[in-house]
Length: 100
Image 1: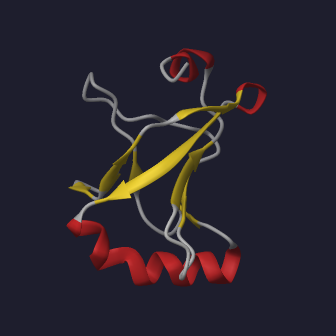
Image 2: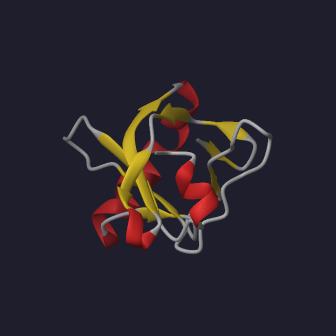
């Protein structure tokens, strides 16, 4: 998982809703995420999720291309809860099959 070109952590993403083209998983942040964590948590408190309109979240694939989900990419990081969750929706069938 990236913000722009900076890697902020990793996640094992799985299909969570095939009909919606949705994937999700537990996010394991690295040290770079700490620069953004307070802002992400504020965004989650205000609207429930920090999404691609807040930061340029990117999920790269092994072929050096990024997922391009119609529904965007978001992080849910609530202060006081240790589990951070990534989700994305609106993936096309080809992209979704990579996570099955």
